[in-house]
Length: 165
Image (tube, rainbow, N blue to C red; front, side, top):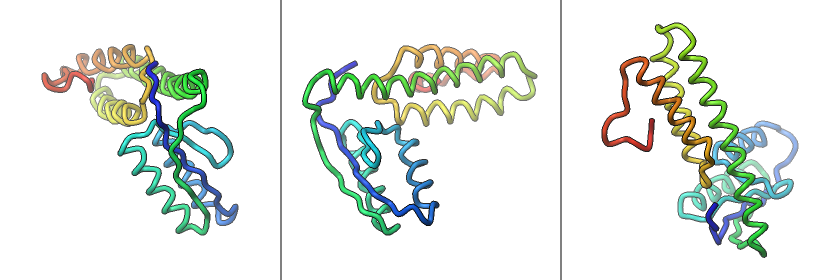
């Protein structure tokens, strides 16, 4: 895993009631693939996209009657940074394993369902990729499983799209 250097942090507090904004925030944070540092503190490797995403969420928290702040930071030690990256990679590894398992199940299932499942799993692949800052080895296996599923329905990966099975 490569060292990132700077991280962007979101610290937030939301009222317990109503619970809708808390649930929405939790889902959006999950979709971004954040590292949970503590209750109400999450982090992502800093770049323009991650900073903007967390700024939008901070605005949503404020609009829901909560408080939020955006911070940039560097872990004090390389070990802390490796731990953050490893935790994020492990979360993506689990998602890639699940995707590969779904591909295997689709290959074992009825031919008529494969094209529909392939579309859904390709969308899942892209979603995981957007939050995959530290690609684990499981990414390659999931990509191979997705390509095998595509081949089974006669839908190979187009020539210019090798990064997306």
